[in-house]
Image 1 (tube, rainbow, N blue to C red):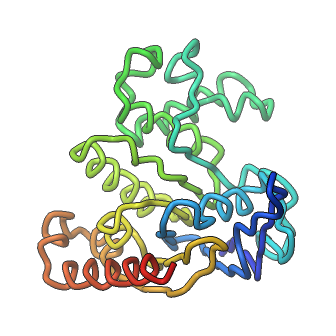
Image 2 (tube, helix red, strand yellow):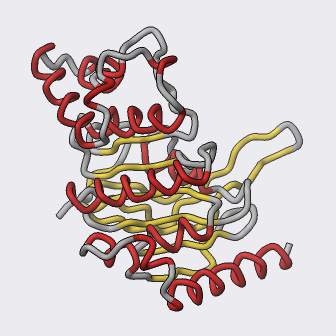
Length: 260
């Protein structure tokens, strides 16, 4: 089973007024089938950590690796979905979903078939020939998911992909991502500002301190696995245990805010 591991990573940027310490001694282990969620105030280094895991940046110290091999750049074993869907408006939904395979030189027919499979997975088969400006925000995020999944990554890194969606669409996307996680066995790393979302979707929830970002507590929940086992999201969220978990995490977040 593949593992994506960050070991004691720190990241410092050169700022106009001196060094900016974004992350300090952060360690994370994501296995296939895990759903790790990062939660904390804006500027606490969550996106920096995702960037290190994706290989977009290198740590100032520490190490990021996949199965013991150091991460030195982006790779097809790690798919990324951004808050901004970053799609190409001049391409169709199908061509956007297939774009990553185009860059890898996969033959046209093969990449289109794979993209069609992923569009079916996210419920967009009927919109394959639509232009991006012809579909809704929630549908664009589904295209982003399909594009990330076309390369069959071992890990999917999601940088607040649901933040701009309305409440109903956001809840639908949460269950879609959980469905994909359950069906694919992909290791997930999600950044969010929503406590409810974090509690519902995580198998491991990481609470970050304000800058420099450190993991101040780790929490382990079974709500995502209960959903994967067939229990409805509504039933889970009505469970008193879910409310207690949400309240616990809120207390931790407030404590971090008050400590600043």
